[in-house]
Image (cartoon, rainbow, N blue to C red; front, top):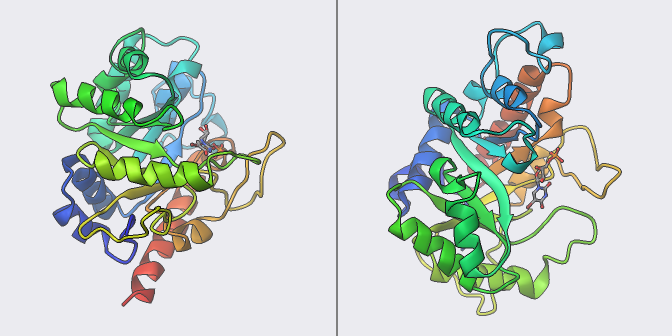
Length: 290
Ligand code: 5BU
């Protein structure tokens, strides 16, 4: 199996072979949330404000009348750090402090997709220094297995112990080509790199997506599902949504929600609504499997 959807987060927190995955399941269990907020905001202030309210101008939360922010309701905070217009290393230093305080992980949705030599430089260096602050990154295997070798090597040789990779096995955009053989290859490559590949970005459980179709005992890949909305079916640019309940039924472990949370007038209320819907669906999945 590639996702152990009938096993509780608490159990997986105890048994998972990867330390970062254990930490994430423990966070989910403690905070009773499987929500990853996709904080696709474009300034440092907005990014930090949505993670944790800042004392002065809060444009994004101004209408909510609330100074609470999302930190307490999420397990993971997903960034696209290259869309931040005023990025400095202070942006991510501060984000790391908020992550420690509110006990969530940071996932940089960088979607690495190049030869190994290039992705190592993109991951470790440059202006963004993603390795230094992001617990989780993701990569496409379109370019072959070398990309995962390269990113694993960076993690292996680095000083941080809590770093993990998700393979982009599927995408939610209309007409996505990340299907079929590509998705199968994603699973097979993940199996060869279990040390640092903790799971997939996918819209469903991938246990049947292998060429050999063999269940591997003890295997426990995490499924992160994007394209989640309670109220919308899609956007004008090809995004396609499913509900929290549908994603959980299909085998998601963590639900990634962007505009459903941050674009309304009260992001905190929305985050709570997604957390409640996601957690309820998770509990019914567990009950259904007993
Ligand atoms: P939304 O506002 O909930 O639609 O944002 C979804 C986020 O997830 C956004 O950051 C995308 O870049 C990201 N995403 C996605 O939507 N679909 C995918 O297949 C992958 C990532 Br991979």
